[in-house]
Image 1: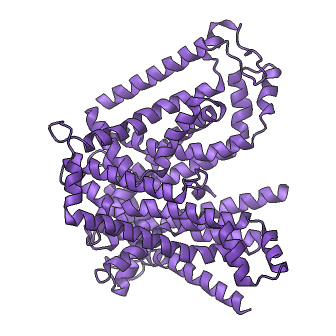
Image 2 (image 1 turned 120 degrees about the vertical axis):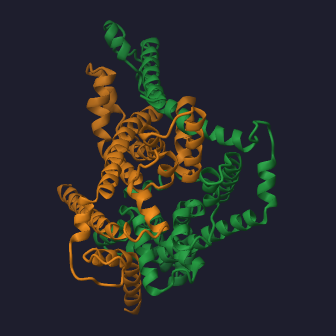
Image 3 (image 1 turned 45 degrees about the vertical axis):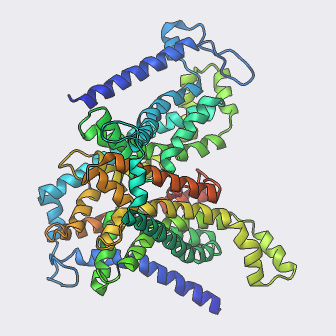
Length: 311
Length: 262
């Protein structure tokens, strides 16, 4: 057994003990909203040990998140602001912003993400609009048809598209264009789903009302349909824009190594260059960009993000 | 009328864009040629290679086992977590919910790097467990996201009624709440499987040396242009495509049956 196995066992034991402790300690807590006493109060030790109120169920998950999500993020923060000897330093950030190639890299990532998002909206919006106007059952089947490739491993899908572009003789010729095509191919379903679900849920009587009041087709679309579908556009854009910036698998597959994304830069610091402090600093910069994007778009709806894949 | 023609033409155009690459792979999975575009006669040898080539076989089994294991564990952890978050109105629930949403929006590269730092901080070697933990950290929040809406739709008086009728909270949980949110749990499990199967970045940061999943194997083959590794992947893609088609058809049939019974 290695350390990790032992540590896992320890975590499991501690968790079980913690749950048992809380269950025992709070056994007299009420369960109902009306202040009724719990029914397990007087039913033997075994019962009492395993009795719990429902909200205590979030403790194991909370501990898991604290250990494997929140704490690791603090490790990134710590590494970003220290140097190899462990002293606090801002050198990593200074290095990033004083190297012309990394600045180019950052802007290239933003450009790729922006263009990909725009192209995805331009393709997915009319598509989702047409599908949402069809008979519900047929529209649903067609939506499934458009998002089904999502079920195929994305590296294999990228490989397929790469072979096709190779057949056209584009590979190595148009690195930027190929990268955009690859990104759009990968992320298009994530734009179609939220747009379709927004458009299909839309109250159609509003459009009819606009038409009754004398608005033409274009005017109805611009003044009614489009504004009402903005939430779908935003959540789709979030699902495309943020992952695109760091999705170096696609840019490496299609860009011939000539389209460096910020994600690739981070990976290099960790795997090849072995400068984890610098890599952490770049990760922090990426987190800041993500944070700004979310502020600009007004946060995110947790129901829509990638979970849309479960349609 | 012209509007209709234009919209159908547009649909067909996008469908071709989406399916042309996949069909190209499917067609060329029936020939042993090393490069696409050169037809070496019909043969099923690439499909045979999936079973005979030990490296390919191992990485396929690795991927499937990992996905099932990670999805199973994350479904248990995520379902319990979602119930806990939903019923805790206080600070605790809010904090856990917030922490849960971090990895939903976080870039995979940042998750991968943070886990690499964690394992090095704890001086753990990268093992199967670190890989499994990495996948759990990525996919469990999505299980929570698919279970939560079902909890919101549930009639809260059902649980109270079970308690009034003498069920213990544990019994009420398993007999009332879990069956009510089962559809959310199932779709969470499916989503977890697809996310685990699809992951490249977190796998590459947490996997033990010499361990390959479909993603890492294919990425290395594409990146290094390993002419001997690429052809078998065409057959693999074709099989995965076939499975996807079957799953989607079954889901559609089940959905339409449900509608009919309603």
